Length: 362
Image (cartoon, rainbow, N blue to C red; front, side):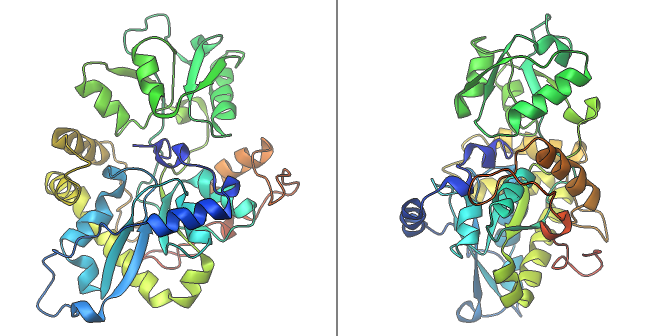
């Protein structure tokens, strides 16, 4: 899983990608959507289905369970939709969305914010989780690190996104430290560096890398960002473009309703949902036990955003609080790479208007 879940964060930032990279990636995209869903007797015929493309932000994992469940169980087919999955590649989902190469894509709050600040047409439309899955982590046997302040002077194994350093400094200072540490950018090697003591701490997704570490006999000790006053953030979001949404509002609503049904199934039946995710991605997900454990943690940890009347809803306060952090730290830049001088209207960075009936919208 990535650092968007690490997922998107390990991808390239949308604003930094060239048109050549976009064209190459788009040509190489492939479909992995299932057409084996059970559906109902009254389902639309295959020929009448409207194709909807969804770009992944990393390799298949439990961030995406709801989408694969909705496909495998025929929820999309029942809604007149044929799912096409665009696997993760060198071009970020945000760039694919902005250039109309994907209808929807998995991102995260900062990813959407970076893209829209830079002038790209990217907007959050559905929050699978109601709270973030990131945490600061050290090897569980590090008795010398009891809280974030003990990270002063230590080595951080990171992923190269601009928000990491300011976030860590905030938490360390809030715990009484100075916020001074060394950084090495290692991407997916960050976890191994912490395990082997070549680095002291990193930022995993507790519902994936945290579970993986526990299962491998190398457990992590974690510190939650929000326990130290840091604002909540969405570590995974489904995003789209205003251009697509306005031109295809009916399809977008049907797609998100079916997707919400998939995530609700994952909440109610985590074991079966995990099995469906593995079935759809048997080559990528060879450790079914990891998928099962991760999906169960999403449920037991009260992460999934499936509350009746608010399914998939994005919260204005989360957008405002975390967005303000990004702005005040100079992390949002325009198309010319210059820091924004005026804080954005965060209500334009997301919308709840296409969520299932009964969900409040803006």
